[in-house]
View 1 (cartoon, rainbow, N blue to C red):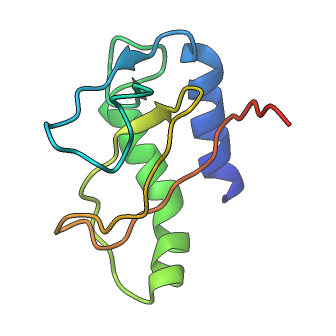
View 2 (tube, rainbow, N blue to C red; view 1 turned 90 degrees about the vertical axis):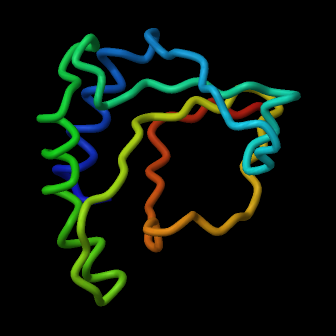
Length: 116
């Protein structure tokens, strides 16, 4: 993760990690096993969260764009950015193909507490 991207995301997480909200997935979703382990979200778009809002979303995209374009070899346009998804114990993110126009995506592991 580029240093500037990491700083924006990790600072936002540090300030808001206790302010996640339950996610509402559509009926029939199989990307995440929400029936066993619901996910929650700390939305970067939420202006109600410290440092959140459209300015943060734009700053993250602007900091990440060059790296993502280098990875894909394509000129990219920002389309969607959700925030920091919290997977609770037992959660599974299944292999899947994103819907159009989300043909390229990136995940940054922000914080992880693993039982080993």
